Image 1 (cartoon, rainbow, N blue to C red):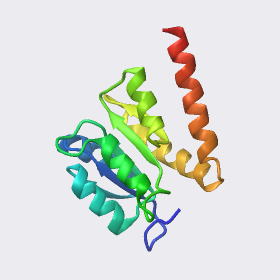
Image 2 (cartoon, rainbow, N blue to C red):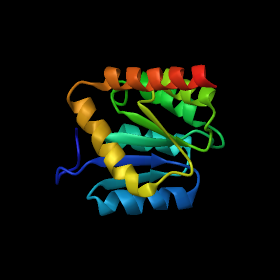
Image 3 (cartoon, rainbow, N blue to C red):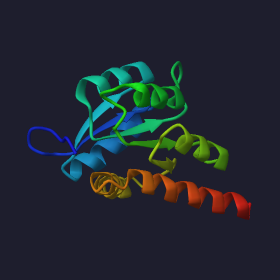
Length: 152
């Protein structure tokens, strides 16, 4: 975990909806995290490259560069490929969740979500990544998804 000078976790929220960014900011800052915001894919990529946050909350449906394209660019970048990505989206279909994990996302949160749970989700994810469990975490999410798909 990089964190900022005070050792706080830095979270970059890339979402074209200002109310969603605000909701994330208020809840994450209340838990002592530093929050950066970007209103679209290109500015999100710039912020990620410049700041190298600890985690990125990334909306899928954005005009111009969508979340899938942003994730692919982040994972291709040398300085950004190690940043865990949590997709934050209204697209709840199983195939969208599968695509999110497939393009390298570490987790997937569907809107509407409980903003109070956001900080613990980020904290748990970062603890597991710090312990070297990123691949294991993604495997668990993929297994959950497969199980859901088999049931439907």
